[in-house]
Amino acid sequence: MTLNANAVRVAVTGAAYVAPKGTTGPVDATSAWPAAATDIGWISDDGITESNSADSSEIKGWQGGQTVRKVVSSSEMTFSFTAIETSKTVLELYHRGASVTGTSGKAVLKIKAPGPDRRMFGFDVVDGNSHIRIVIPDGEITETGDITYKGDEAISYELTVTAYPGPDGTVAIKYSDDPAWLSAPAP
Image (cartoon, rainbow, N blue to C red):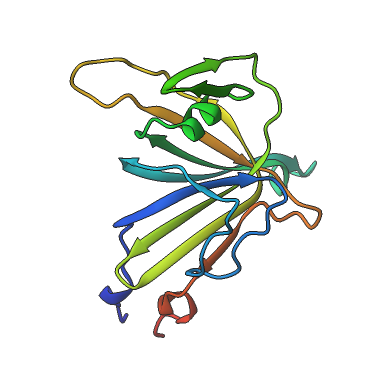
């Protein structure tokens, strides 16, 4: 077996973005994000976690009760991260349906019961010259963690984005300029 240590990737740095739903996202790993996209800011050193889950139902054969097939009954793709930079964007994402207003350096955050707030989300993951870009054309913050106000740690905002399927069933699009993506393992 031939191993390729040059294909081992580490998410050294990156960024998270949000834009209004319907914004045309980038179509490669390195071009600029559209003007409507806002960089969410500092993300904790836990980075971004991508999760894929699927539920399935087993179909058992009458003869012997063995599983003869599994049918996927539901699936979900989520991305979780913790924003540690407090900003209007982060506060409005964390408190879905809320809005920050103010003048002369004095702000008011009016928190409402959460309602639908679908948007485009995106993530850049960078390891040297290798880039991975993830675009979620239709996503929504569906879970938030607790906010802790404490003297020895950053105020942080745990956010989970659920990716919803488009008309063709696509929930996310990944782009990369990493040559390892197109290389086949040696025989």
